[in-house]
Length: 140
Image 1: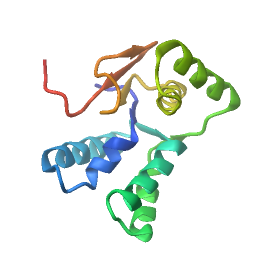
Image 2: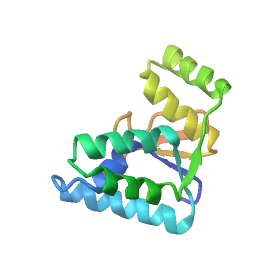
Image 3: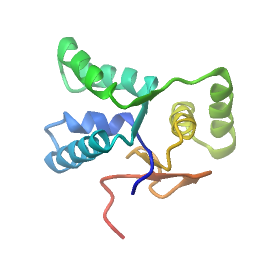
Image 4: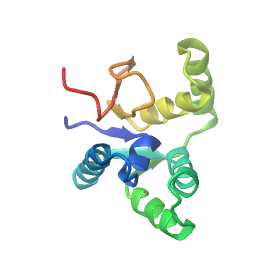
């Protein structure tokens, strides 16, 4: 794939989670490739959620989590507008997404992404030109 790809919070968390080495390896590989190819996109929401999850769920110190946020901020960071917020609310209303997932989908759309890498949404689901892909799904 050569298009822009959005990275959801769960992928970043898996990259630092030693409990599942296979997912950790795959997450790190995806993050590394997207950084090298300059195709990765995240949102401010993803950075915030990562910091919270890393310090709370992974037990990472705040300083180390801050360093990771700085690293991940090398991706293009989408900052949503009021119009994006309203579009996310519509995604929630019309497609049954959680409000927070609606914000993620809208950020990916705003960022011009064709792929949304996430384990939290249905693999293969399509929103306009955006396809949800779990990097951990078994190849078909």
